[in-house]
Image 1: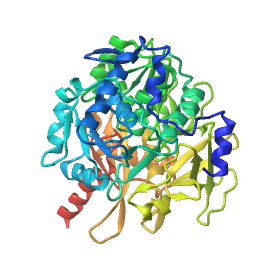
Image 2: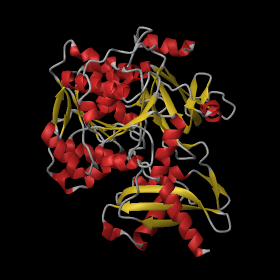
Image 3: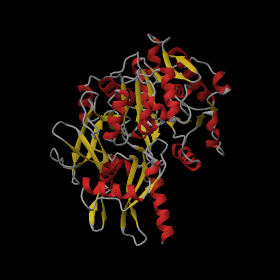
Image 4: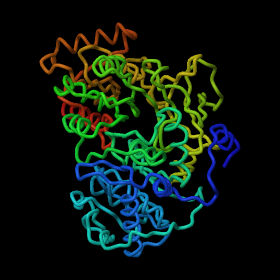
Length: 517
């Protein structure tokens, strides 16, 4: 542990014994919260005592299948009570659970298995087809191997800095990278962000629309509520707006976690007009920039200011955040206690306040390496700092504003442009529901700017709105900063973590370029 990380941890009073296993986030609740609800689901509610017993059975089922401490195990699971139990039970048994994106195609599933050298897998029955053709021992989340295993599971001795669990990066460029987290990491994010920003108590009910396999969802639905004896509302299957509203009505969550795409979908659904969100005290958004128009529409309808933040899989959760009382529209927020952030130029020197730089972040929850990827580790983990590759500015009040990726600068018609700048401008247009802007190569290898837009009213899609949006971008920015082509879609494609799928849109555009050549 470097000296800055130690200093940051000391600043927030974070302490753990050297011998520590992250499954204590669950088992430590048995002393005082055994009978309190831990998870709510369509199948029923489990108390902490029952969840710990299920976790013990799962840990033993893995051991009975031949797994040994240190082995990796794949969890290909939807959000169900067995999922948090599987994570905790595996870690208590000394195993290393891999939280796998269930939207991954079969070739990626095989890559995860071979890259990690996983020794077994647990699968939600409806997802069993994701692991066909493998010789891995596979446990079904409702299988007899679990039901017949003992609920008593002794904690396998581990150090706080030992490997605890993995997630794979989204793989926006190249193969996904295995992000290795330590036993202390989940407790740290709970002690910093969940305590200082969310201010969770045992009376809270956390509802994360993003799934548990997403680092953001893991904190929201697993480690954060467990850390304080609160409960989590889990929604299996596709979290459509109607199902989300129905779950909120049935279980009355107090903290709602979403993404800009989630809040857009909820606000656009007819049920938004009559939905009762009076139980919700706090709404959180992360992963992408939240438009000020969407934030204001949500506040007017439901009475809450959405609290925007920024995190990453490598840091496990959010390290920049606004709060409900102090925030700035379009900002990712200020530094969360327990973390340090700096903006640097291409030479690695810190830039003055107000100037644009590339963000680096430091904190105890940060992954120290990617599995089997020394090249990417050296590129990203730099002397205790995580190089994000994201361009930001920071104002005099300490609020950070996202400006795009460091490698996003492209030359269009002889002038340099950041596509995200145009995207953020178009997102503020009153007729736009969702938008994505990217630079696309033409057949002659020149670059052009393409936009994909979902209008709020399908009837508006057409040449008149396209011209209006181009003129709007020019008026908000500079005359050369506008999309040359605009394609209207009923909805923009999403990744498994509900972000806009930029790769899919780029492929769509390249197909059109190829067809026109």
